Length: 404
Ligand code: GLY
Image (cartoon, helix red, strand yellow):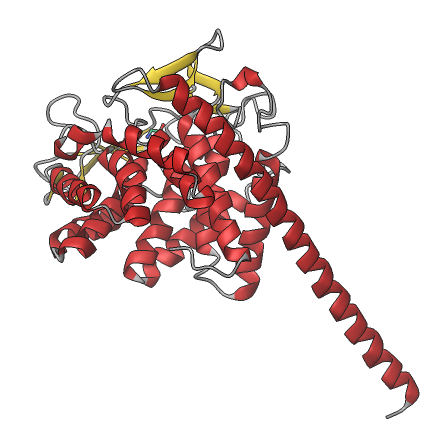
């Protein structure tokens, strides 16, 4: 071999080793930062759990305009997130105190397994008892997952081919994109019971939503109204977005996460393609900021002078990490890079509260409902839940542990 060729090969090998070493060091540093944040989260959430433990039936959800803690009860769609947060932190820390509180707050949801008046039962039961069952194998939790799936199916109408969201008004049948998240409960219950009905309802809902909720650019509407007698689409509107034709950020996040989970459970390539298209819409959007934490709606005409939604950033991050497991390497790398930027942004002082002002919530700067002027630029229990989920997922990836 000629000597200049030898030198070229040597340089290439040295370069390759340096890049690998740098990326390993980068991963190690990122992992160590995630661990520091999770250690901090354990301390914060124990303080939060203590502060609400003597308020039976209550769960922390946000702060009010004066900065005081707002609690909810089981009438709120958000009630399962705090128990779920504690289960994730137990998974990470194996801390018995966290486990004790995870059980205590999960027990507060006891009666919810029979609730048929909300589609949000998937969020409520799966984030709490779903994680609890996954981590403990407690058969009491398993029963609740099964019963709640039965309850959710009561809201399914074979004519519309989807699960009804809100119970408001006669003759209209609203279905919100958020409802995709409740399918996880049905898939799990199907596996636990062997009852295929739950899975079929989930798949039918996903297919109907895919047909009717999306625009040509893969962004989605918030609410589709159906005629329950014919199954026809009557209207497409928003409730929490900037406008009927806008892309409400958390809605896009729910859509992405929803189709990723449908692909996980069915391996149907149609769902994977949909998830990729939604990811493409979000990640290529000209108004997605540098730190990859979206404004509350991609189409707010006041951008950049409007609020971010950290909850949407956290949900997207978690979904991208899972999506990276199902796609070719180059595409996976892109999703993981964005998810990492999102975790880094959310873990920076711009979002992560390191002082007492956030009353033990982790993230600042989420938006519940801008049109209602409710929960604007505040911490939210579900932002923290998905932020922790994203970090725990990334941690598993780096450590070579399977996500599920
Ligand atoms: N499911 C209600 C929301 O995302 O705000």
